[in-house]
Image (tube, rainbow, N blue to C red):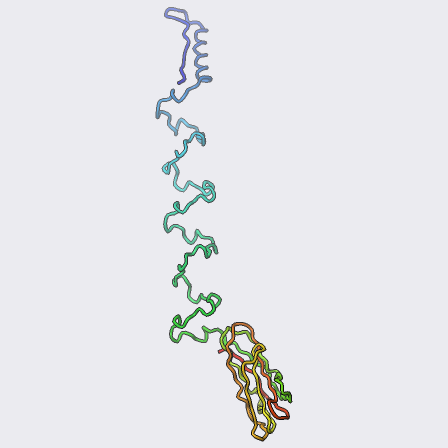
Length: 282
């Protein structure tokens, strides 16, 4: 503890000289300016903060570690700048206290959603698109009776060729019928393939000479899916409309369908008049 020691160079009855007073002043100045007060010179709990401390004079070094308690922090006084990056832990967030407004748009990633935790109530009506359903993953059990409407299947994929007009061939090898070719992009449902009248008003038919026969073949993406045969019983066939239709399963994607004809037996010219090709998904 610092001790104030005042020199007394006089006694009772002595004359008090200036030097005696100067010695006392010097001792006071030395104590206050050089020796100074220590902690032991101040009575416990005797310095008040409100009146004895200058504003903004308590520095970081004057605070003991862990000495600022919750009661010493004014409500709403901890700002963002006072929190170190990555220092708000899960334990510091009360349950149910992260609101929608606190999550930036597009910031909930797949990894943040626990498996099997997107419930029906969390999906807005009409928001499961075709792209969100894996191929072959909608089973019969998942469909309500009468719930598969045309609107739910998407637009009917279809294609129609131009008219073959008056196609003829003498080839015994299959030959592409003029214009009877359609390319379309399907959803993966089976294709219905039909040769139909071209709608021109002209009479359509398959022509076969006497004692001859003709065959029609359908190709999907270059591969044959079936043949249809028309023969004669010794007379020319001029007005026979061929029953040409096929059903064929395909995967989703682009597909090309075409029809070919050939002279199957006998001699002469076989023909197909005023027909066109119709292809659509079932």
